[in-house]
Image (cartoon, rainbow, N blue to C red; front, side):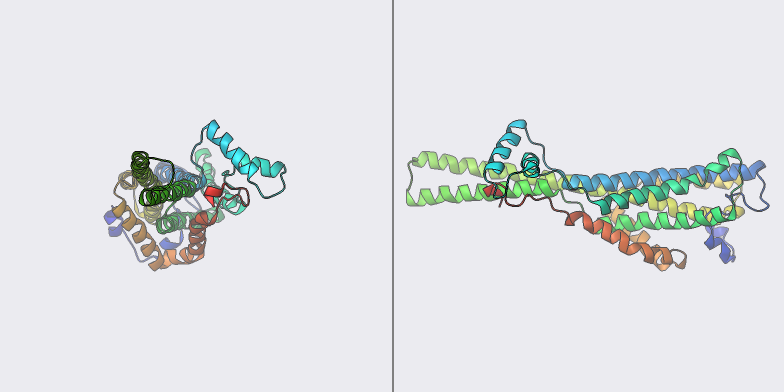
Length: 344
């Protein structure tokens, strides 16, 4: 895809320091003829980069919410759970305890995460707003050009690092997993009790009844194995969707920057050929082939960390991306002292 651009490279190192200096219609560049057409061609691609990036942020936030959500419960289950929790509580009953007993699995509000998501969205919205002036024919200043350069580098690197960090910290549906684990423990306890009765001949149940209970418990274990596998499949789906969207945005941003760095060397026809090709390439990242996707995400991070043009931004953002990805799993929903005995 980038072969045409490679043929057009020059020795001018200043090309590596601006995002869309040609697009931004600064200095002596006029707002007439092909200049406007070229600017708006790249503007449309930049808006698409923003759209894909915002979709990636939504996917990241959705993934985190799914990690914390509780399995759905019927009204009867909620009622019985409330009765057991409130009557077995070991704390003074107040309005907070009552609310927790009704819905102990409500994900907590975490200001740090919410601020992180709001900040991400604000960055990408701010980047896109720089281009709004082109629509009205207003000139864009050199300061705005420099601002757009920093935006583009930061946002592209951020998407690449988030894709890689999430891949290394895959999502886990915490409460779905916990619910199955609790039931497995109870099931094993019941099964071992039945085995002890069969061995020792204790209790009032007949041999036939005990064997039937044993068979029923074994069938339940098989059904719960399928349930566990479904949870793992849903986690993998969440991972694939999120990493694919982040990778798509990163690839799109990286390729667009390469085009923009050679904006002055490209004519309108060349831009009209390259931009659709870039958008088509980015759209191919769907997550269906996760092995290839994972390699692509890792490869992009390796490239930007080894290239001086990207490395300064990479160093600055690496810890933030890793912390954000790892912090999702650190949030545990619990209800001390009023949980059901079987959940301890």
